Length: 253
Length: 253
Image (cartoon, rainbow over the protein chains, first blue to last red):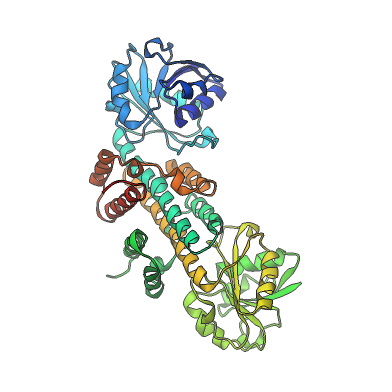
């Protein structure tokens, strides 16, 4: 049985708490947070504290707070010879400034408050300075997920960029798509099945093999008619992505 | 029972043929195609012909061929007082040049050869010049789908642009994301659950409410470090989309 203390009370802290609580071979001894209202939500799962000097003794301490607070927060931790990990995709391991053992425990997913997720399918990327710590994190991760990867800080930085494309930028494409629908009295729901199928497909076949559309076909007439219909940022995005796709798929310039 | 003839032998023609064949209140009398090998694949469902002068007498003729061939192909059809529709998102209704009644029957989805789809959930956008024809198309569409929408050619053009963002451009984001993974020895599968959850989420909550990431947070340090790690087209896309998201969510410039 591996014991953890969760440091933080946001969406990820909650998802981790429920995942470890449900797991057979790991458990949450305590959740620490400064926001009492937020902390209250964790009371039904485990003990809580607002006092950083009163942390329980656990095998692993998991920091799940905003990226830019990780460094300064870790400095406050006075845990001798304990493994402290952060959960961020974009922060290097050495941002942790506590005395002692450090590591990373990064679940690659977008977490929201009211959307339950099956942790079993969520990839967890782990990193540690010491081999025994890496093995401990591997064991811990496998108590809640079937997909565990050793990813070092250099790789994780690039994985985070890849996630920005796959999540942040894709979400902005969805927004643009829905904005266009609403502007022209088209119910955005019409696009939902297309969105879901496009995502599904990318997990089965290489996206380069299934690219379609006016840019891929180099259908100049349609591209020009679309550009004429668009303005501002939407037009800029359409233009750049069309040119990029044309180049990727061998349009001779 | 509404009878149809399918004109074309591509992916969409096949998906429509199987959908109408399975439907209770519609049937495919015949499939026409010039490519004998392709046409062979339809023989187990219905009659086929390579002779455009020997089309069966049906209620609706559905052209499922490439966009730029629709106009010239429709001219060849000698069908007096029969409803002829095309299936394209990007072609106006009046591109049809046959004598007689015309319409559009546009399923908003991306069709591939080997991926079965549940047509019930695929939105079908219909248009016709005559009211009776619109009602006939509505009835026909409802034999295979639960989602039928009246969308005129002006709206459909914009819907097609919205689909370019939601499908073509999103797929290119996936490609870029996977390219980055592969380049840095990261298994692209790590990003799959993120992709699926991002898509699911967009169908439940407005994308503007769930936008996250360095651009949304206006996290200049991370953005600059990402830009430094990227080159070429990937960098250009990152830059433009980041600026656009920053502007959308109220960064003061």
